[in-house]
Length: 159
Image (cartoon, rainbow, N blue to C red; front, side, top):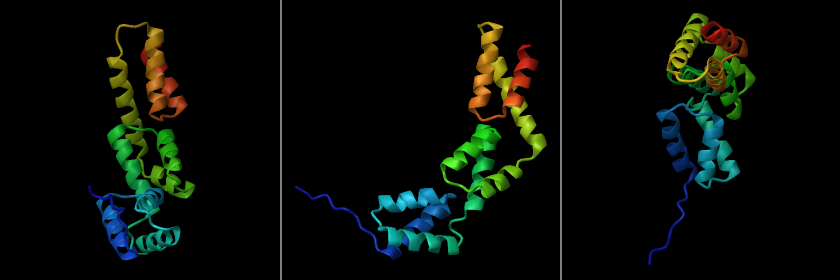
């Protein structure tokens, strides 16, 4: 019969582990705090480690926000509303959210939107025009595209 041992970490060990965690992929403060809690670190140690990660640039909220926006916009074709919502859920500051969104090129934004909308519109078949339009609108709104863009597009595509 073997006993289950709860792994504990010294502040040094936890710091190294979190340096790797942050170096592997951009993280936000919330993810780092969660990770440290799951490692059973006490609040004082968590604060010390987070300060260390910030001072040594392993953790940078502005950089996280920009990377997040770039990735989700390019890979998932999320619009500004969804990007803002998801970053707010991660407790990212308004300033960092706005800076990250400002990096999206307006022309590229509209191109991605049009490409996504047209691809989706062409894939909706076998139902009434009204239902097709509704489906397209729901799809684009769920992905966080601005309402005015969505309704204009739906009107242009399905009348």
